[in-house]
Image (cartoon, rainbow, N blue to C red):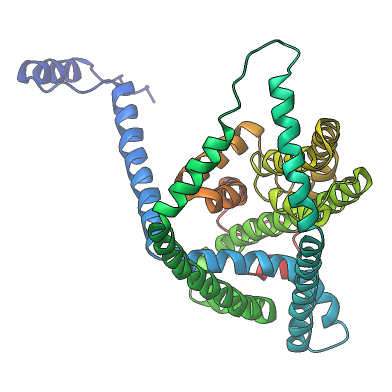
Length: 386
């Protein structure tokens, strides 16, 4: 049978010439591709902006749920341990009570330490200020620095406080509303945590029944990967923060810096804020050491806290977190910066875990087929938890 004749290109060329004559040329391939990507990018940016707008409208709820998920990730292993010898409800109550006792004991220790050393630190702070002034006035670089006006600065500051006392009181009254909101967020977070820990698996199973059958495996895989990353990051950063706080407390106690316990707690808190928290904690600890024991102690404290930071970045985080959260430092820096601009300190705290979860979800959507659940090796409780 003879091969069919190739199509005649003349009609197509004639149609193209006709389009050109009408002024309606067919756009080249690169222009069509660029236009397609452009409108998709616009829709994506609009969707992200809509999500951010919705979060700002219910920010208290978002913060409470995020805190509840953090507490759930931390308390789940302890609850599972208690669950071996008691019912799930009692295990949940025991785990939450254990957490309250630990946090309450830590806060009590910090308050007692501050009360016992505050008067001593206040006296040493004035001595430290005089040492700083003397160092500036008699610096070896022979730079003339006029610091005689510091008393005038103090008087001006006192006058400003007196003149703006009413305004400051009004701002303090406004901050009382923030305190009430903080208490409401904490109560809502604890309430959600109780149900997430006690019956998170059953809540997830109920949600899966509301999803179309053909997409359930996809939802299950994506949620399992996201929760695995989030819980791994949360538990890892808590362990790293505890280790940093203990090492900082021991180091500051050996050096003899006052308020070693509160400063150790500050290092603990600073660990949760990537790139920003650790330097701020180091600066505050160095200032306290400078005020209390002089320049040499401040230098030793600065080097010691910096060494603990290096130990965290190169040993603790790779050892504890492994590859559950493997983000490039540039991604972390950009994420923390954007989070700080958008949401302040809270934005800086949540930026890294949210980026890690988003990347984990994207990777799963890119690799998992629609027709089945991947063999990712996740435990059932990890995949089913909220």
